[in-house]
Every structure is written in structure tokens, then in C-alpha cells.
Image 1: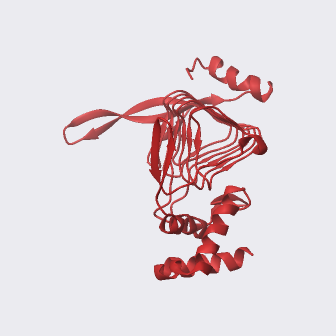
Image 2: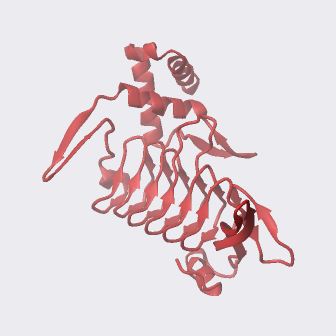
Length: 272
């Protein structure tokens, strides 16, 4: 079925006139339903890392084109938008605290807790994760199992350019308060980001736990404990501090996951 859907999406993306045809509209809506139920993903694990399915992103972009604007009234609030919201949280096994908002076309797995937060279309939030107060999960972001996104965390979204990869937060990660992760950065399994860490593709991620620094970009190695840092860079107007992220150690294997999340912060005196 996916091959047939992909063919229709690719054709409609190349010729937008086709989206007036019910056949193509049905294909677009079928893809969004599959993404909403977690049977299709914008990005999925592969032997070589993470594989992005660009055609699924194309379907999401086309979906914006076929959805009519409409008004929702929930006194005293009024909203005017194209996108439907997720429903039936009880049957999904999801706890959604007012004012948690997740758009239709985002997959929210069982035992996820949504505090007052926002999850955009195309995102994938796996089992047992917590999206804490005022955290945002951007379009197409991939959040693994047992992840804690703390208060105010910003996980960036991506639809265009099509070749751009979404942010990936792998299983068991703890993302501290007010962290920002954007531009397709991958945070590997069980890593811990302390409060206010900012990660982009250009951010230097420097492992300072050994005798010599080791630099990464776009990827936080598994089980790393990360805090904000800065380094001095020369500019025409002088030398100034530029933000970076510092890997100061690894989570201990001697404790269970839930305990080690807290212990990692205490061991290295990190706020979260």
C-alpha cells in the first residue's frame, strides 16, 4: 500500500493541480491517518542511523493545501485554523492535562503524559514519555520511549527543506528545563541535557571528560551528561564568548534508569 501512496504523493507534489482530484486527496488523507496512528513515520531507525521519508513530509505539506479553514469555539476561546486536533485520549491511553494540545497527524503512544504543552503534526512521541509544562514538540520531531521533556523545552520542527532531517530524541533521554534542540540534532539513547542547553547543527558539542577535548556536531553520544558552556572566538571587532555544549561525563550503569536520571544530575551538580 505504501508504494501506491508514495507514487500518488510524489505525483501531486510535482503537479499541485492534482490535489483537486478526490483520488489524490484521499491518498493524502490516508497518509496523515497512517502517521497519526504511528504506522508511518517521517523518520525511522535504520542500520545506518535514522532514515528520513521525504515523501511523508510532502504529504503533510499537501495536507495543508486541502484542509479548509474552520472556526472552533470553546467558550470563551475561539480558534480559526485548518488542522484538526487529536481526540479520544482515554482510548489511546494518553493522559492529556488541560491545556495540552496535539494536532491530528501527530502520533502519541500509550502511557504518554501531556502536561499543558504542544505537539505538532508529523511528530512521533513513543510510549511512557512525558511532555512537561509549556514544552513543544515541533512538526516531524521523533521522541523515543521513556523520554522526559522538562518544562519549557523546545524541540524544533521541520517540514522544509524536504531533505532536512527532523530532531530525534532517542529512548530514555532526559531533556532539562528550557533546553532547545533544533535543526535535526540527534540526542542518542539515555543522554541527559542539563537546563538551558541549546543544540543546533552548528553548536560545538565538546566532550571535556577526558584528558583531551573531543568535538561533535549534530549529535549527542548515548548516555552523555551535557551542560551549557562557552568558548572564546575571534571576530573582527574582538574576542567574544560563543555558546557550546559540554559533555562532562556519562550516566552510570550501576543504577536503574529512573534513578540514574536524577543521579546524573546530582553527580555532576547540574540543574534541570
